[in-house]
Image 1 (tube, one colour):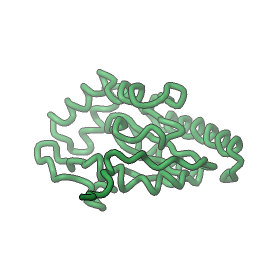
Image 2: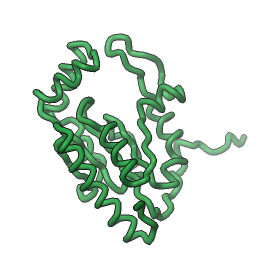
Image 3: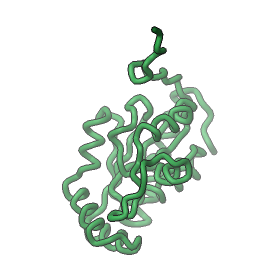
Length: 193
């Protein structure tokens, strides 16, 4: 009896050589991922995908967590939905988690950091519960996202930035934009001017 192939055992599709990079911007909630990703998309012409929005809009979740007021992300659904986009290249992925994305997707992984006295009021403005704020602050103190990035990706593609002010965000975007320009030039693609 032929049951067909088991997709869990199939090799992932190979990534074509890209002329425009795929970038992951990650960090604890409140570190400025979305703002940085939006500014970078404007500066470089890359496409910004905010994973949290995709999860809601495309039903890539397994329900809603009332306690933390957030969707329970289905990592397999997210990866399956993003795969065709990542194959094209030129994507900026914005998400607070980073350990479930395939390593082959990214040319650069940016980890944003912020001190607790900056992070706490940002999370309060979002009307997060005290428990959710405390959990996120603990994650930042323990460098959970930074450690996940180092455990999941090659060290040479990881950049860590402090993201506590508009000036720092702008400087971060400028530095990442320069990296994008070098990548595009080396890949023989056309840069955004």
